[in-house]
Image (cartoon, rainbow, N blue to C red; front, side, top):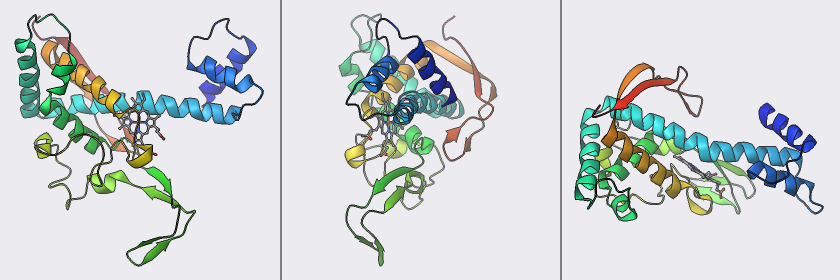
Length: 244
Ligand code: HEM
């Protein structure tokens, strides 16, 4: 927040001739006459957008690499799926197509399992619009409700051996959208608007990663949840060409 505040001050004192990024648009909106934005809201907005769009996907991809490293069977199946996609191509040097993306069955299972265990949004908030009766208790209208997705994702009654990374558990299960048992991307009206984009990004990354590269662990990879997922000593890997 300190950094964003400093950037805001800098841009205010030295306005740029042309808008070049989202921050410039926020600044322009801040300076318009009828705006509902305040500086505090604008900074919160910038912070949350950076978190929602960048931090989430990069954390999920980091955890995905860790799972690939620790589960050779998953790496093998993922590699086979992607090598088969390339083999089926008319010209192997062509890029990925939408049809190929849609055919990635195991990849989607792998992404869902990674998102289930990542619990990147450990909490989401809702507000009771009317009195809600639940198991003999009443949540009065107007109260905030804190939904805790990990409580569902790590519930042994919903997921057998829940701490185990097992992408095969998703076989035959609907992998798009949200359900009461899977809310890694939220649910309902505030369902993550970037969910499909994030999945494309992860799938494209995995496609390139398993077909072109191999990786070696250097150090780190420990996980803490405070409550969000973090790698306190980083996750250092060495990536090299698979066929070099
Ligand atoms: C692995 C990646 C991601 C995960 C796990 C994730 C998770 C979530 C969750 C759980 C919510 C719901 C929050 C709530 O209900 O209060 C959410 C909302 C949101 N996400 Fe994502 N997200 C991811 C990637 C992205 C990306 C790549 C973008 C943008 C490019 C994005 C933009 C947003 C925005 C703007 C919202 C708020 C939607 C609203 O309130 O209507 N997310 N995300």
